[in-house]
Length: 526
Picture (cartoon, rainbow, N blue to C red):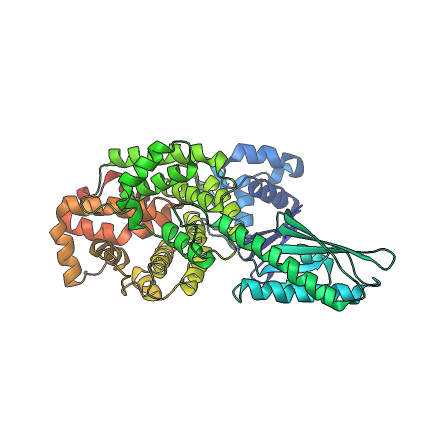
């Protein structure tokens, strides 16, 4: 059972007796504990006041049953804000929703850890066992290269540590001056056995240890390399590419609107027809459809009806593929990305798929944009920015991936309520990315401009050149690509506010599309 629930800086014990938040210790009354427990156990679900009252009735005194009063007390203790909630959101006239997202597991720190299956203290061949594990560590580390950390430990509890991606557990059984030794390579944290190896050792000859360490280290390296290939297989990645090149290819294919998907539509269509039951071909086709949505010309755009048809095809195809891609992390990540983008109520499902897909990839950069966007969608902007910063640090400064992560970080900062100017400065968004289309650069400029100040002459002239229809299509594009995914209305409004203001100033409030107005509600007055 999980002992602590973590939501960013907030840590709540399993019994909801107390919490720690930004250095403060918080204690809860019996009624507060009951209410907090009900809300946390029903994340992102509307809990009506009557249902909450029923759930906590057995633990509350009649005078203490005002749900609104209890929620306000909880918010006060948690440092929450009803207008911009991090934990408890209000559905006016209906009830409350727990909107906090659990903190992700810490990133994996060790690629492979080697250790015994049991305590070696007092073992008659302890010296030989430690020597063997050290030699295994050195040989495997040299074979994998410096980028993947290999560690060894004499403590068996460290071998099943959650922060290791793989473990090599070695059993040492002494029997009449003979050492029976078996090594089991496991994928962590699932503990799935990938390979077992029996070692043939002459316990009186250290050269035997060196020889066997060399022999089985080659088998372990081969198994680990194959595992890395397995998690980077699919989406048309060439099988003869080196491991690191495969990961880079996957990052390019998934992290940005890759022109490859748009240009290869006819080819992908033929492959799809020839292999109607192949999930890889199906998801590549969906990525082609996705590219049509995001790489359309923003100011002529596409009709809402056509967008709906395309998104329906993506939804139907991805949902059909899900049962048969469970063992392919790369395809799972593609499916999660697509479900997130179409924004049809699959956010929880997309998050679940992504969380299962990313761990086998270790620090696989292709997962970072989506993980950040899933946080962004739930209003966890600080957590999203941290993930985007990780991607920025890991990417080459002039790469498309770096540009993409900076744009996503800028969006998160704007959605969180930072001024567009400060968000652009924080992400160096004026330094446009390689091959970034002029239309996208213009829209980023309008989004990050001050809503109540004049645009630059060039930006003003570009907006005037569009006319009312082009400007309206641009607003629709910004909404569908960057704002509609955010669950909090304030976040959607923050992303749309500046461009809506300048379009309304030039063309009147009638130029604002209805779908955008519905999305931002009364938060933005055009």
